Image (spheres, rainbow, N blue to C red):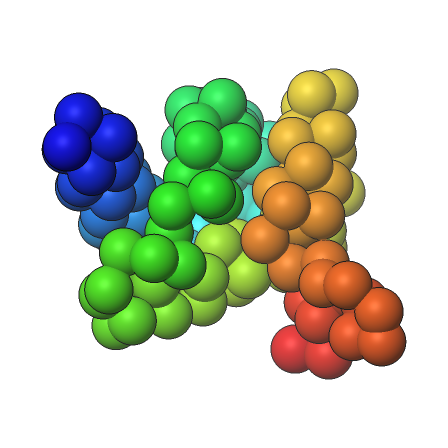
Length: 123
Protein backbone atom coordinates (compact mmCIF):
# COMPACT_ATOMS: atom_id res chain seq x y z
CA UNK A 1 0.00 0.00 0.00
CA UNK A 2 2.90 2.38 0.69
CA UNK A 3 4.14 1.95 -2.86
CA UNK A 4 0.72 2.84 -4.28
CA UNK A 5 0.53 5.89 -2.01
CA UNK A 6 4.04 6.96 -3.04
CA UNK A 7 3.20 6.58 -6.71
CA UNK A 8 0.04 8.66 -6.29
CA UNK A 9 2.19 11.35 -4.72
CA UNK A 10 4.65 11.18 -7.63
CA UNK A 11 1.80 11.48 -10.15
CA UNK A 12 0.40 14.50 -8.31
CA UNK A 13 3.87 16.05 -8.27
CA UNK A 14 4.28 15.38 -12.01
CA UNK A 15 0.92 17.03 -12.74
CA UNK A 16 1.88 20.11 -10.71
CA UNK A 17 5.25 20.39 -12.44
CA UNK A 18 3.63 20.05 -15.87
CA UNK A 19 0.93 22.64 -15.12
CA UNK A 20 3.40 25.14 -13.66
CA UNK A 21 5.90 24.63 -16.48
CA UNK A 22 3.21 24.95 -19.14
CA UNK A 23 1.99 28.23 -17.68
CA UNK A 24 5.51 29.65 -17.38
CA UNK A 25 6.59 28.53 -20.86
CA UNK A 26 3.42 29.89 -22.47
CA UNK A 27 3.97 33.24 -20.74
CA UNK A 28 7.58 33.25 -21.97
CA UNK A 29 6.49 32.38 -25.51
CA UNK A 30 3.90 35.18 -25.48
CA UNK A 31 6.47 37.89 -24.70
CA UNK A 32 9.57 36.62 -26.46
CA UNK A 33 10.32 37.25 -30.08
CA UNK A 34 13.20 35.90 -32.12
CA UNK A 35 15.42 38.57 -30.56
CA UNK A 36 14.41 41.58 -28.49
CA UNK A 37 15.80 44.86 -29.75
CA UNK A 38 15.69 46.49 -26.33
CA UNK A 39 17.43 43.73 -24.35
CA UNK A 40 19.23 41.22 -26.54
CA UNK A 41 19.69 37.90 -24.78
CA UNK A 42 17.06 38.59 -22.10
CA UNK A 43 14.63 35.99 -23.45
CA UNK A 44 17.18 33.15 -23.54
CA UNK A 45 18.31 33.99 -20.00
CA UNK A 46 14.71 33.97 -18.78
CA UNK A 47 14.10 30.67 -20.57
CA UNK A 48 17.14 29.20 -18.85
CA UNK A 49 15.68 30.26 -15.48
CA UNK A 50 12.43 28.50 -16.37
CA UNK A 51 14.03 25.34 -17.72
CA UNK A 52 16.62 24.68 -15.00
CA UNK A 53 14.07 23.37 -12.46
CA UNK A 54 12.36 21.39 -15.20
CA UNK A 55 15.70 19.91 -16.23
CA UNK A 56 16.36 18.90 -12.62
CA UNK A 57 12.91 17.30 -12.33
CA UNK A 58 12.97 15.67 -15.78
CA UNK A 59 14.00 12.13 -14.72
CA UNK A 60 11.27 11.91 -12.07
CA UNK A 61 8.76 13.68 -14.31
CA UNK A 62 9.47 11.47 -17.30
CA UNK A 63 8.84 8.28 -15.33
CA UNK A 64 5.43 9.51 -14.09
CA UNK A 65 3.95 11.90 -16.61
CA UNK A 66 2.63 9.25 -19.01
CA UNK A 67 0.78 7.53 -16.19
CA UNK A 68 -0.70 10.72 -14.76
CA UNK A 69 -4.06 10.11 -16.42
CA UNK A 70 -4.33 13.73 -17.55
CA UNK A 71 -3.74 13.60 -21.30
CA UNK A 72 -4.72 17.26 -21.77
CA UNK A 73 -2.11 18.41 -19.24
CA UNK A 74 0.56 16.23 -20.89
CA UNK A 75 -0.24 17.49 -24.40
CA UNK A 76 -0.19 21.14 -23.31
CA UNK A 77 3.09 20.60 -21.47
CA UNK A 78 4.79 18.85 -24.38
CA UNK A 79 3.54 21.41 -26.88
CA UNK A 80 4.74 24.36 -24.76
CA UNK A 81 8.11 22.68 -24.20
CA UNK A 82 8.50 21.87 -27.90
CA UNK A 83 7.64 25.45 -28.88
CA UNK A 84 10.08 26.91 -26.34
CA UNK A 85 12.88 24.60 -27.51
CA UNK A 86 12.21 25.51 -31.14
CA UNK A 87 12.19 29.26 -30.44
CA UNK A 88 15.34 29.02 -28.33
CA UNK A 89 17.18 27.15 -31.07
CA UNK A 90 16.61 30.17 -33.31
CA UNK A 91 18.23 32.53 -30.82
CA UNK A 92 21.63 33.96 -31.63
CA UNK A 93 22.53 34.83 -28.03
CA UNK A 94 22.19 31.82 -25.74
CA UNK A 95 23.81 31.73 -22.31
CA UNK A 96 26.34 28.86 -22.20
CA UNK A 97 24.31 26.38 -20.12
CA UNK A 98 21.13 26.75 -22.23
CA UNK A 99 22.12 24.52 -25.19
CA UNK A 100 22.89 21.64 -22.82
CA UNK A 101 19.59 22.06 -20.96
CA UNK A 102 17.69 22.20 -24.26
CA UNK A 103 19.42 19.06 -25.51
CA UNK A 104 18.72 17.12 -22.30
CA UNK A 105 15.04 18.06 -22.34
CA UNK A 106 14.76 17.32 -26.07
CA UNK A 107 16.30 13.89 -25.66
CA UNK A 108 14.25 13.13 -22.53
CA UNK A 109 10.83 14.05 -23.93
CA UNK A 110 11.11 14.04 -27.73
CA UNK A 111 13.45 11.21 -28.70
CA UNK A 112 11.71 7.85 -28.93
CA UNK A 113 12.98 4.36 -29.57
CA UNK A 114 13.56 3.19 -33.13
CA UNK A 115 12.03 3.52 -35.63
CA UNK A 116 10.67 6.92 -34.48
CA UNK A 117 13.76 8.72 -33.19
CA UNK A 118 13.67 12.51 -32.78
CA UNK A 119 10.02 13.50 -33.11
CA UNK A 120 10.70 17.16 -32.33
CA UNK A 121 12.37 17.60 -35.71
CA UNK A 122 9.05 16.70 -37.36
CA UNK A 123 7.30 19.64 -35.71
